[in-house]
Amino acid sequence: MTPPFNLYDFSRPALNELLADWGFSHYHANLLWEALYQQQGDFSALRPDLNGRLQSQTTHALPTAVTDLASADGQTRKFLLRLADGQTIETVLMQFEGRDGLPRATACISTQAGCAMGCIFCATGQMGFTRHLTPGEIVAQVLFANQHRPAGSEPLRNIVLMGMGEPLHNYNHTMTALDILMDHKGLSIAPKHITLSTVGLVPGIIRLADEARPFRLAVSLHGATDAERQALVPPARRWPLADLMDACRYYITKRQRRIFFEWTLIEGQNDTPASPCPRPTAHRPGSARQPHPAQSNQRLRRPTDRGNGRQDLPVHPRRLQPAQHRPPTARHRHRRRLRPIKSDNQTLRIFS
Ligand code: SF4
Image 1 (cartoon, rainbow, N blue to C red):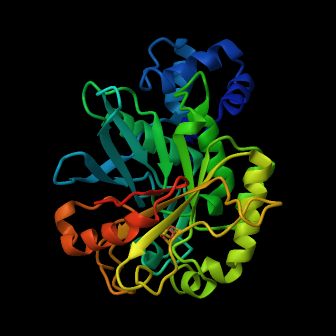
Image 2: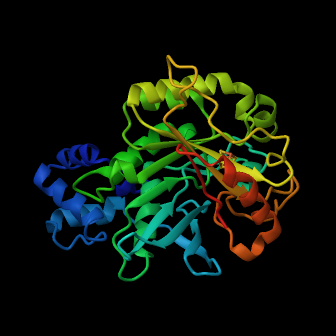
């Protein structure tokens, strides 16, 4: 028996094509699109014959939550979601107060089950790679998070691709999912509110620039020398810093966009006084002194067991951790050390 189509796998043009093949017009395809993304999957307004066919040949079920863990302050919820084939992935919902005082939410979503990159400090990387997520499985995480946002808050409008997996390793499915999320007749999430984080896959960064993808890009450096990066991030052996910085220059020049450089601080590994300061090391083309229009974010994190930490936790290492899990002395030491290097193009974001 053919497994049912997952309707969330379809971009709007692809859904138009599917319904055209079934003998329905674009008008009905648009009604279906709105039912999926604006009416929480309520198909009652669709033509009965279309509804019947959808019920028999398609699915639009969201993943189910296996666990739902809240941080001590209740502002962050981490869901372990079970997919249709039994694989589990993480989605994190972060709640905060906007400048206008209204509650807002950001979803941190996964793009793969497991990860092939093998970063030494990362529990997901140590689990290994299982499979790419489909576009629908990526989109469904946002719909799930939207359903679980705090009562009274605005619809979810911020997304970070920093969950399980390397988004640029699952390039095509990730791009289809982002096209669906940004579609102006659907969730209509603004590109400036979407941040894709990569550990530094050079061909993917170049492709993002060539395809003029409109969302924001964050590059995780974690080290300022090849030796330091290669010790933490295996893909750095294939794409050394010089190549990565060339790709970043290309992206910035072509897109005229700022890149966020990220730095996970691992106690005793890349946060020592001997480590170079976490500043962007690249320069604007044509100038030896002007830095990239880049921003660097530093994140404080404990390593996994392999790097001396907590391999037993089936959770993604970039997750926000409750403050009481982190030794306050270490956090304060990092704050003291990093504050003086903050400049116009750098922000210090210590997640605690
Ligand atoms: S840090 Fe990201 S890229 Fe590295 S292993 Fe973990 S999930 Fe993969």
